[in-house]
Amino acid sequence: MNRFNAALPSSIRMLCIYLLLAGNAHAAIYKWVDENGNVQYTETPPPAEVKAETIQPPPSPMDSETAIKQLSEQERQLDESRKKRQEQAVQEARAADEIALQKKNCQMAKDRLASYASPRVKITQEDGSKVRATEEQRQEQIKKSEDMIKEFCKE
Image (spheres, rainbow, N blue to C red):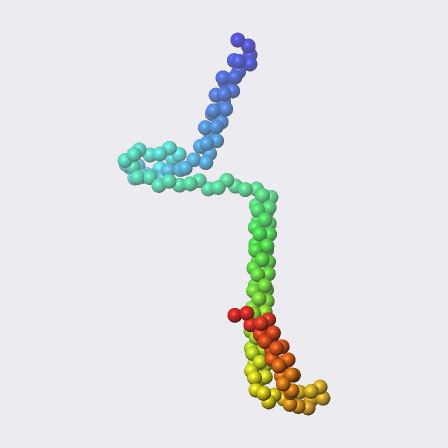
């Protein structure tokens, strides 16, 4: 038997021992009271008839550099979500303003159409004077008002 084969079983045994120890490093801790009233803390479960509380071990300590990196990442994520919320609020406000403006324009177009319903309509000229509109001018204004209603009143 050569030296390599003889060393192999002992190295496997050492590996198994390390794995067992590493597995116990994060094992649960059991807290229970024995028959004498003493509080016991063990890594092995108490006898079956004993009521025990399972306590998880505290998280392993973190080095400050890793903690700073995690904190910086969390701050970055919070900033991104804050910016997204602000952008969304601005977009919602713009959409609400646009809807309000569209409703206002719609009502103005309807009012304008109603004002041209009468055959005796006066129109204001560039100099500020009012004159009676001809039927042709009235029909032209009615057509413009109907077009405005189609554009602004999408109900």
